[in-house]
Image 1 (cartoon, rainbow, N blue to C red):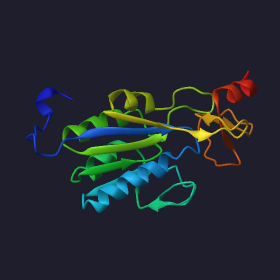
Image 2: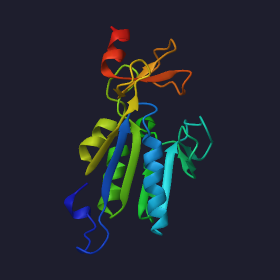
Image 3: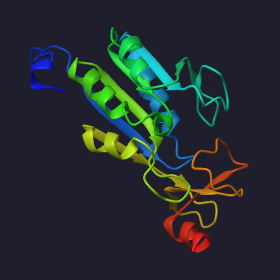
Length: 193
């Protein structure tokens, strides 16, 4: 985005920002996203929430955490639609960001430059422990990154890896406890070497 495209605000006016919540499966990313969005709603801010259309694990439209807290969202095919649907809002929430296309960081920059607070949740690594989708770029441009941890099911240490328990080499495999478990670095790599 060109410098001239920024919508300058007064020092007391709305300031856009990008916040990223990342971690492994079962670490509470979506729960934290919902918590922040609910607080924005309590503050009577105009909030829009988006998720990838492919994520239908718990609900067709709602963003749902593993402990079944939920908030209404709009499922989308691609990230560019967020610019149209989130243009007249104050806070934009995005769940499962790793499943969106590589244009998502640019979309978030445009929203933040318009004075919109953008809150994003997603897996930072795939099942092989590699950076996942647009998440590394989002983390790089964010004002705030919160990395949350699960508990390793093997040893009880803090876990930041999503270990796939089913045989599949597909990068994207939607699943829950039947397909993934959180693991610490040692337990993750002991079974992947």
